[in-house]
Structures are given as structure tokens and as C-alpha cells.
Amino acid sequence: MLNKRDVDSKSTKDQQMRHDEIPADSDDPLLNVLHKSIRFAVRILAILMVLVIYWSVADVIYVIYERLQSPPFMLMDVEDILQVFGAFMAVLIAIEIFINIRLYLGSNVIPVQLVIATALMAIARKVIVLDLTQVSAEQIMGIGITALALGICYWLVRLKT
Image (cartoon, rainbow, N blue to C red; front, side, top):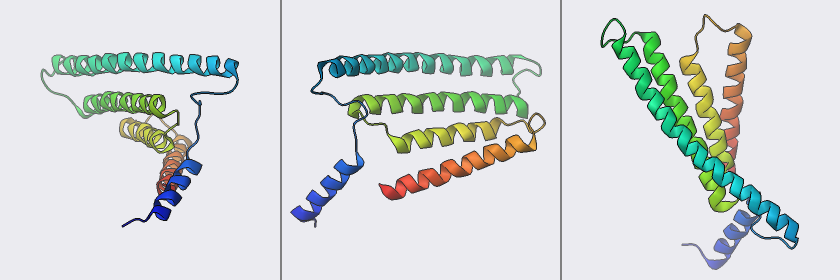
């Protein structure tokens, strides 16, 4: 069981790790107006992201429909399936970005771990839909190094929290 000192120590540690990107209030009235305008802009981004998600879902439905309607009827080859997977992953990435925006609006703090996880998902999407005939060895190495760096970064952030 935690005693009061352990709870206070954990609370202090949380406060030291947390910082407000856009504080709710300031002594300077101009900063307050500017911060409110930025928060309003972030709300607009959240609305636009929801619209993008719906549009992307409609696109996934359309892509599947198109692939199933083209000869051979009701069949998809591996390339078609990879395109559908890529479309699905794009929707999931958009949802992750929306969650980032929502968390930012709720706490004024950028959720670093979630941002890194979203970047990892974007790299995973790239790897899944990668056409090896269209990319060079340097590009493949760059994607691999990026994935490795993001993985290490995610691991280090998880250790910190």
C-alpha cells in the first residue's frame, strides 16, 4: 500500500514530466487571446480530421467495390489486397491523429508516446504497401532506419513513464 509520501513523490514526478504546451491562462492578456485562438484552430483541425476519416472510410468502400467489380469478378489479386490494406491503414492513422488532437485539446499536453506510436503505424503502413520494384536500396534502408529509430524512441519513452 502506498503511503502519503510515495503518493506526493509520484505527484511531484508527474508534474515535473508534464508541461503545458498552451497554458489555459496567463498573466498577459495578449497571450490569453493568442492561446484561445490556437485552441480554436485545434478544434477546427479536430472537426476536419473527423471529416477526413469519414471520407477515407468511403474511399475504402469504393476501392473494395471497384476491385470486386473489375474482371475477374468478385476476386482480388495480391496487389489489390495490398491497396486495400494501405487504405485501411491510412484510415487507422487518421484515427490516431484525431486521438492525438483530442488528447491535446483535453490536456494542453502533446502526448509524445501516442505521437511516436502514430509515426510507427505510418512506417508500418509504408512497409506493408511497399512495392520493392519501385524503390531503391537506399530508400529501403532509410525506412528501416526510421522504423528502428522510432521503435527505440517509443521504448525509451515507455521506460520513462
